[in-house]
Image (tube, rainbow, N blue to C red; front, top):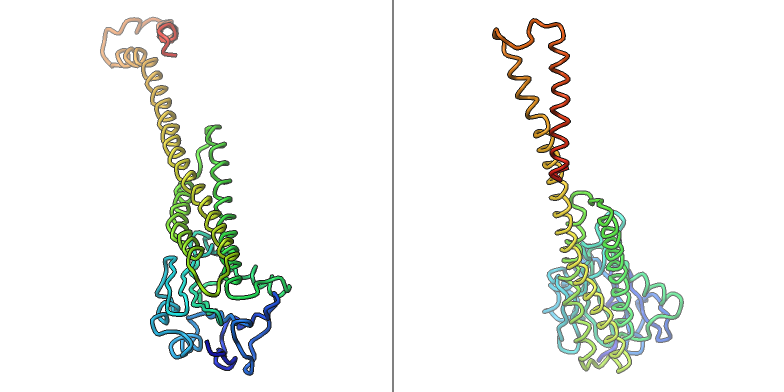
Length: 327
């Protein structure tokens, strides 16, 4: 491949434009820099910015078939060979504090042995780990190492989020054992996050596995083995997601049963109260009619005797319910 000049990668509103020094460090791309396989470049763009969008549309460094994909048309994780380059779409946990983590951020890459062009709209926090390693001089040496480190960082963030969901499910299960029902919609939100993660992480695991098996010229055998380890680690995370989804389904059934039992107990209590007071209600209604001939109507102790009779009747009904094991 021909050497790329740094001036060809001059994008004013680029998120960052860096050149790997081949020793684990990084330097800014200067206009007179020469970019080759030993010193590849990394151009990270926000495709919604005008200068970046114009550069993506006009640069001769990328094939025409990948311009739309880098500009945001691709969403699901995938990998495609494009001649001497490779097009990838990856998903990352959204770590912004004001947004939900399950609204995964898409990152699109086109790379070959000389250059890496990545685009995004929202911030990809997993890239900060790679940038920190490069600034410390312990980062990747070439394009293959860069891709492995990025995939490793993406998987770390996904694993941390899956672990946090797992901890939430454990807390819900413990609370449910104490008959504590979660707030309305809380369990549904966790299930939605698990399903969204399952939807995007499963094809991303397949992307990693394919990268591990593809004979890309800019990836060494050791890097392919590391990529396979990352795919296996994400696969274990997917197994954990499947287990969590099953556990939330069991909790949903348990919550429904607990609420049904609570409603049944209340209905049963109300039925017993109605049974206890049914005879007294009949008697008070009968003696409450305004007609002549009511027994004890002209007797001074008639009302007191009637109240005592009602108390005895209530006690008798309660005793009968207790003997019948209804209470």
